[in-house]
Amino acid sequence: MRYTLCLLALVTVGCSGSSPSAPSTPAPVVTQPAPVVAPPVAPPVVPLPTSDPTLFSQIFWNEFVHNAFDAPPGTEPLRRLAQAPMIYLKTIDEAGNAIDAFTLQTVEDAMRAVAPTWGGGQFGLAGIQRGTGTMEGQHGWYTVKWPNPPLAGLCGLTQIAVDGGWLELNYLRSDVTCGCNGSKIRPRTVYHELGHAFGYFHTDSDTDVMRQGVNGCADVRPSPREVYHATLAYRTPVGSTERVSGRLQIID
Image (cartoon, rainbow, N blue to C red; front, side, top):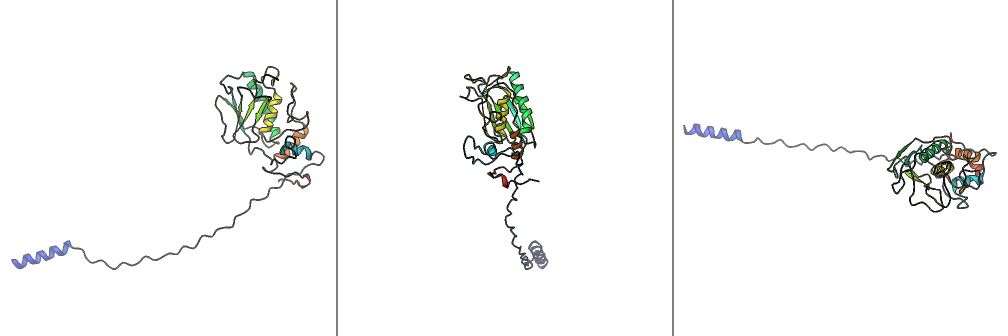
């Protein structure tokens, strides 16, 4: 019996113990090839549009898109919008006072009428939304504001071709009226300020909408030379400082 118990004890210990492990085989080392870095590719050079020598004016071009009238000789790079903007037309001024319905409609109608011209035939407005808030700083928007207290000596003030920018209409100016025919703001002022929003500067002729300080109630639209040069501007790369008409080329 004693020998039998010993034998059973040996069997039990053997079952509860672990068997010796087989020697491990090291994992194969896989060598990854070094990544191939492509050399940087320079962006393509976009040519400038061809100008018609019977219509193109170098002097006017420099004023209209390079700010040569206010800041000669005109070194501002060309600015313009990249897409049709949405307009946020505020229905209250900056002090919270309501703007009358007729003035709001006059401004909206004027913007819709002139925007395709200022967009060079490429686009006009994406739409107009009214409200009491703001879309300043929001991609694709321009906010129309009504300063209160009023600006001194101006009927309007606009950020030039700024995505998410603003446009101010000085409807409370007291020294000179900025309105006409029942509207607190005349259409010509709206055309002028929206021209700035699309990227244009002041020019030298009273027949131009972008001439500063022209008063009166005549519904003056952009002049033929403004229409023509706006078409060129919206076919010219943003940031261009090209001022030599003989080097303008077509964009296909």
